[in-house]
Length: 379
Image (tube, rainbow, N blue to C red; front, side):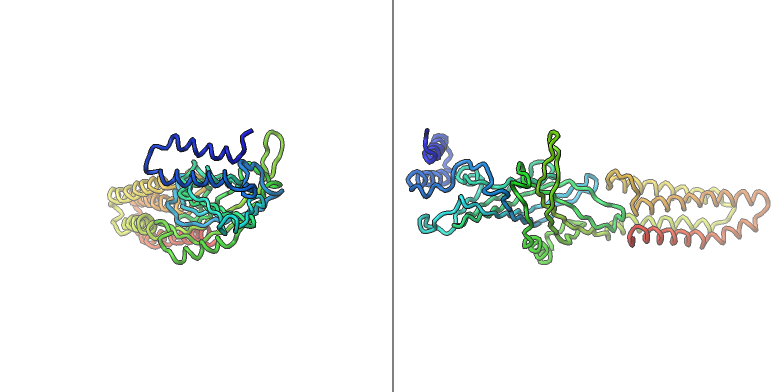
């Protein structure tokens, strides 16, 4: 049977056989020297055994932290958001302990994809974000091993996460988006995840200092982490997995939507009320103004629908559009009713009703908006 150190050295020789690009010569030399160091070192240096398949304890407690570095984008239609995150995990593995005097260093560092995949042979938890869409991009990775066996894992990655959004009070909404992280392949009796609160507070401090973290249209309010357990039924057998739930709070900047969509809508509805100052006999002109208002509101509805996910409930904006549509449609019925009164010789009554409608319609519209705002925003 070939010794484990010899196997490691053989892997480096194979790398040399395929090494043809000068740009990677420095990486090869570093790897070759590391292999020779393992081959020629004493038996005490073999603390890191190749292929450690199991956690060092039952359960192994892994302290996890997640930090938001940047919010790339939020997609309301797909209910997804993209962010750059830093993931930190630490645990104790006595199998990786070493003598700093014998090794000549107080800390062993493995960084980059090559050193992580080819040189580091210890165990590490595979932290999986289960609501992540696709694989994402890992931009940097690093493992630090201390003499007492304390291991720290650091990773920076881009993630696209799918999470339900609550849009009842759109566009005055605050979203609480979740990232669900579990140790892939390890049940709770093997690996227990714990929250490292330092990194949640680090995100909050970082957001206050760096305004560039916020994406256009949103303000990052903060980050909270909590540990719990979740059950999964696998082939009739129920297994429990430890889980970290990270809640990212984002508040929408509603100013642009108010000025681009809602404010013009209010002005449009108000302009339709100009028919109350037209002569009651001008039925054709009154109907033309009302129909133009109705069709414009329908066009507004299509604009809002294109920027919203398919939902089974009405948002604040939906009810505002619906109320505007109904009150504008009511002006058509009012004009037809006045025309009918005039044809029946009741012109004075028609003019009196038209005069009262100058304040009845605006008052009803304001009360409707106040009721909607109270129901959706305040409660």
